[in-house]
Amino acid sequence: MSLRKRKRVGSSGRLSSSDGTLTEESSPSQPSPPLHPASSLGGFNDPATADVLLLLQPDDPDSFQSLELHLHSAALRRSRYFSALLSDRWHHPDPGGDGIRQLFLKISPAGDLRCPPFDAYVAVLRLLHTLDFAGAIRSVADALEMLPVALELLFDDCVRACVRFLEAVPWTEEEEEGILSVIPFLREEESRDLLARVSPKAAAGDWNCTSEGMLCGLIHSAIHGHPNVATVKAFVAKLLRDYSSRDSVRRVLDQAFLLGLDTVKELLGKYARPDFRMAGDNDEREAIQRLNLHATMVNVKHLHWLVERMIELRVADTAVKEWSEQTALAADLQKTFRDDAWKNIAPGLPTLVARCTCRLANSVASGSTLAPGQC
Image (cartoon, rainbow, N blue to C red; front, side, top):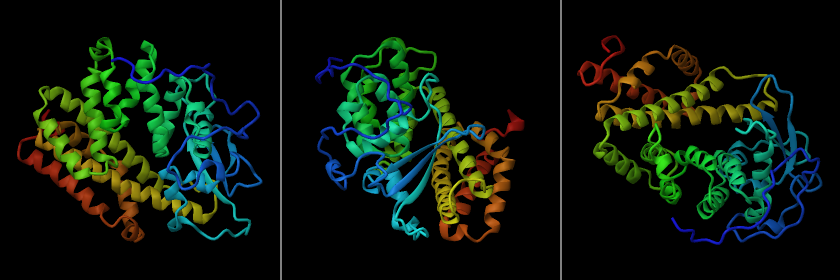
């Protein structure tokens, strides 16, 4: 595909939080529709003007490394994740009276082990304050490091900036592999131009990454936050029914189901077996617990939609096998339902779990799906 946008010129430097300076230098900001213009906010990591203290913690119990950042709530609200976390629903009066909110964010190290684990997170948090996407995204490596963090924090402006940059610049074969790995997590309209530039060699890969990657992206769009969810789900369901390769559909649906099941198990496990060593006061821990349980119900709803598609297409064998072996998940559900708190937070959770179980059991009883012992 010919490049339709001007190539960006400039040296590519790694983003680093270990250079000893996290205070943001003044730089022009591009126009954006957030709550406040960047120029009206205090500097990034400025203790004098910050009203939020964010602690970045590695998602590794053996690691003692952490990083404190002094941030501004008005800037953080440009991320839908932080906007929900800072909403009145989860806001509690500050017992210290200093007006500083304390938040905690567990992070995973970057895929490139040569990079410090906080780099991409610090870069995206800085962009929430500056909106200087052109200055921050100077290479394909920069975009690929920041894009997963922007997707995790639901920072839509940053996601769009990373995707637009990737659309406009040349890639190496190694960088193309990184782009293919993030395409399934983008919405269909965001990934369309990227997929159009995938090389024939990559498209002919062992996993058939172009076609199946597109299916993964469409399924992700159908079950994760598309504005017109019902229409997209109907479109994706028809596409799966009409797709020429049933084996590809089976692999894609199996992958989506297993990923969703792992997410449900992780979230419900955090709710049913909370880590009381987690930093923060009781109110903060309670808010996180509520978020975990609500997210569990949302992801079980996604699983139910996937189960319906798998049964309809007669490819539910993996789902039946995995669902029937979830002893730990069943124990966490029993523990959760012993406490009446779920009735106010996720009242539809028992019904969704029962629907998944009944649909899978009925598919086995009708003979359309083989039980594990019959395979």
